[in-house]
Length: 143
Image (cartoon, rainbow, N blue to C red; front, side):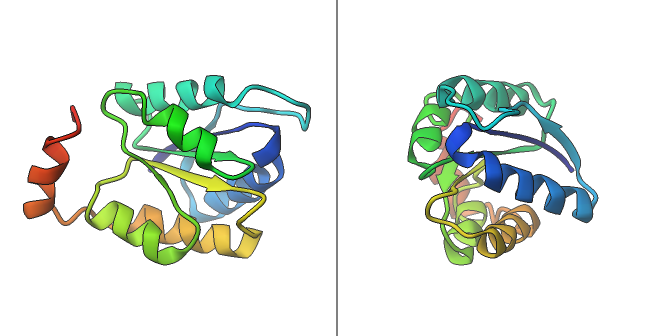
C-alpha cells in the first residue's frame, strides 16, 4: 500500500517510529517531512499528505503532531479527506469500518510508540464495511 506520512516538530519522533514500522510491514512510503526536530507549522505538512491522497498518489495518509488535533483539523478542510484522530485500536478500527477514514492522525504527546504501532496496524488492515455507512459518508464527503 502507498502511504504518505507527515508531521510537525511535535510529532517528529513518533513519525520516525511509524516510518520504521511501515517499512517493516512492507508499505511504499512517501515522507513529506518534517525532517528535523525544529519548530515548523503543521498545516503545510497536512496539505502535502492530503494532496497525495486526493490525487491518488497515496492510498492513505498518516499525520502526526503533538496531540493530533491540529493535524486532524487541518486535514479535514480538504474536500475528499476523512481524517480521524485515533488514540487506541478501537477508534482506529471504527474509523475505517464505519467512516472509511483515509487519513490517520495521532499525537506524539498522548500516544506511546507501541500503541501507535498497534493503531497503525489496525487502521491499515481494516476494510470499510460500506452498506449503510456509505450513505452516511456521502452526506458529508465528496469522495
